[in-house]
Amino acid sequence: MSLTFSLTRNVAPASAERIAEIHADPGFGVYFTDHMAVATWRQGSGWADDAVVPYGPFQLDPSTAVLHYAQEVFEGLKAYRHADGSIWLFRPERNAERLMASARRLMLPELPVDDFLTSIEQLVKVDAAWVPDAGGGEASLYLRPFMFANESFLGVRAAQRVTYAVIASPVGPYFSGGVQPVNIWVTDQYSRAGKGGTGAAKCGGNYASSLIAQYEGVDHGCSQVLFADAGTGVNAEELGGMNLMVVTADGQLITPELSGTILAGVTRDSILTVAADLGLNPVARPITLAEIFDRIDSGDIVEAFACGTAAVLTPVAAFRSHQGNHVIGDQPGERTMQIRSAILDVQYGRAEDSHGWLRRVV
Image (cartoon, rainbow, N blue to C red; front, side, top):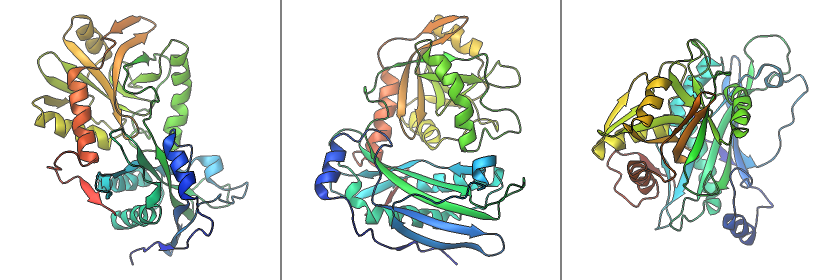
């Protein structure tokens, strides 16, 4: 039976004035809406106890399995307010499918696509006032669905009780300084994921293990880190939280192919489609670090960018490593910004949704 996520309303919601104050300077993932969606899965009986309830803390026993074995997965997507006041989601079915795939890899129960969509839509409807007006910028409501092992048990096995939840946060641009090219540190000491690991799953452990390399990059004046494959250290894979793409002088858009160690980004997939619409030749294939660096140095790679739900597209100024620097430029590339605008224009209703990617909520 499908879940409905019936509403228990928050009796002390934020005032309109407080929401407006937050919208004026939301940051990213700092403030949260009045409600959250929740559901519980139990071995033998499945999903139940689904509801939209007042936002608040979970009470966890110290022996709760997720605190010890990191059995959890999550997603990230946004709700966008269009100029007419309506609110839309961008390809939420893909997020639902990816959450199911991540759950399978982490031995968590799969939440059906329709139930995922219901949880998102019911939360956005009740907290619609929290979805900011874009106003020509990039404000939106960031949605974070997640599930975790919520069983008090220290044995090493899949949990028999799991909590699913969705929380929401009004956000501005991921990088507060706007669309400025960033320097990328290429680590040769740390790996993000190996063959047979959890690289293709969206789970917290992947992000936790990437932090040490990210801070290594900060020490070298870089804001993000690029990982190579764990087996050989030869092939470029992805950043700590974003996919990588490069643009060549002859109009190719190249990104590392999905190999089981790279997250199948929804933004990544959308860009590959939009790039073809804009006359580029999208290519997903293995690409070595050496090829990237040599082609940047020769002028054959003319642009590079990272992409993901939070930041959309972030131009790359240079790749830095212990072996040297490979500089692209200190201004966003023309193709990068063209693709970025094309994606944002669809998300905010400023351009035709020719691929049927939008789903109206309000």
